[in-house]
Length: 131
Image 1 (cartoon, rainbow, N blue to C red):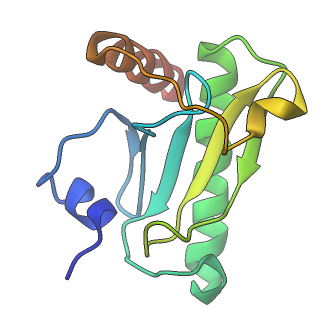
Image 2: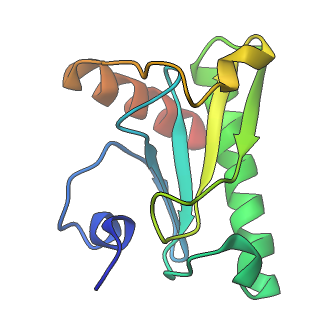
């Protein structure tokens, strides 16, 4: 059975898409810890990041870097934090989180609840910076 992320890539489940190419996909986390919290995934469904072949791993990292640079331009922040945890969805994913202090990367605090119009505006702002 396809992961929820594979279903998002296939267009079966809607998302707030930030960027896409032939191998990778980036979209806003629907339970963000910060405005602009983005997930970056390979389109190929592989559960654990270190099980990716080297070419896909390097490509994912390069794609995530491009997305992070766009987030920095679109969302006021000091840096974009990076986390790879991946136990909740069996599909490799990188969390990119705009941060101003290290505590902003706390995944156990209450998540933000943003209106769909705000989520769409954030996704579009980051996407514009990808161009």
